[in-house]
Length: 398
Image (cartoon, rainbow, N blue to C red):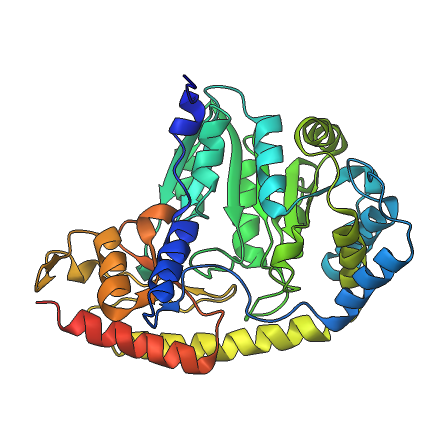
């Protein structure tokens, strides 16, 4: 008899994927479900990136195993991008190309965290962060935020969360799920705290860098003393509409980057060769498609936020980046309609799916049980219908 390990038995499927599958199951039954559950741009990969992949196949040059850390010219392109876009100087030996930014995050955690080490996570956080820390036998430490302060934590909260066991700090800006973007001044205030605690490595997930509605992207690596103790995570999925290509990267201090390469060599080796050639074209080619996508997401954000603000009892911040809304819907807890009783955000997400035929994700998956997450990475028409369905479903709860 096969016995499954305790490690995997303790892992739940991400709620984003689970809700997407539930919506697909209902759609297969002929039910008109609008899915706002998954974080995936609805745009096609830009043509010049597609063409680069096609040319790579036709060249007959990229069918063998690639270097574990990625092709040298792609690593150089990442460094060029960091210098050109972000004003940060890195060497190719600090870059590791991976199968998506998700792998880059867990690579980094597994190379940093020992059993019992603490990793601070501002909540809400991306759905897999906490479990990744636990898989490394680390201890996640949450910093709570709320919609009233735009889901932003403070330097005072950060200082209070740090203990002698703190090994790392992991966050995203622009943030999934809240759309929160930290300014250069806010990041400097956090850096001032970190400078008092040199044992902490910062993991900065910047995958939504190109979906920013408030100006130039800021990274904590810009702050004095932080570049050599910050790991930047980025990738191609969001800003270049390349989710299925599975291509991400980490940029880390040389010693840590070498460890990440060693880790990756033992369980996936190098990322897909053709995806790497496509990524090279994305990083070095025109940014006009990315800018057009960002403009479309901004328009959709305004549409969705305006609609949500019309619903009684819904509290919402104004997302400054990414393509999510994260409304606090806790005023509906304790209310009912027919056989439905809403005790928490998970109940409400299921109610909206089954009754309103709109797929969302419970905020519990992101470390905030008061909210739900909606992706606005779909058409204006679908978003208008979805917000109206949410409105009608919520107001009938008494």
